[in-house]
Length: 167
Image 1: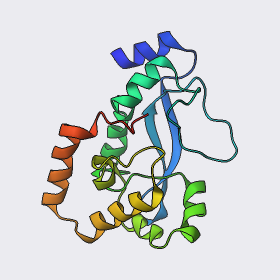
Image 2: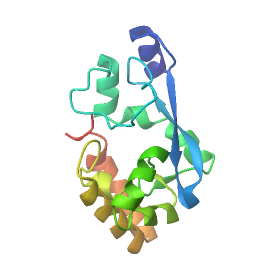
Image 3: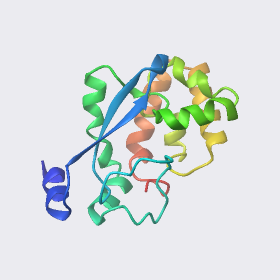
Image 4: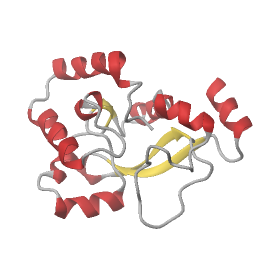
């Protein structure tokens, strides 16, 4: 509730941000996040947020740096659209771009997308190397186990919420 009030008071617009993402079986769903930008990104070429992105509000910068903007994704988990652990879901337009450019990229669509993942706990978030992120996602898929999920959740608590690449 405190986050929602801070967003509403600090800038005009909705509290929650919805965006199309893709998960297991290439199924699209709407991901929920707390809104961190002054306005929704206009239609056009999708892009990742950059370190000093001028669209981010002051409250949004704090929410992103602490990953608190992602708390509403628990609704996606409860609805069965996401898992707590797995490769991060991506936007459909970016998947169309990556499917041909990155060998093995579509293997990510064989597992449910997650709130946190092997790549994220190793600092590969935001505008970081896609090739390296894909390597970590494929490692997770090949070596999946309950214990690996538990390890990732534990690592998320220790070092996954606040990271220099969370912007």
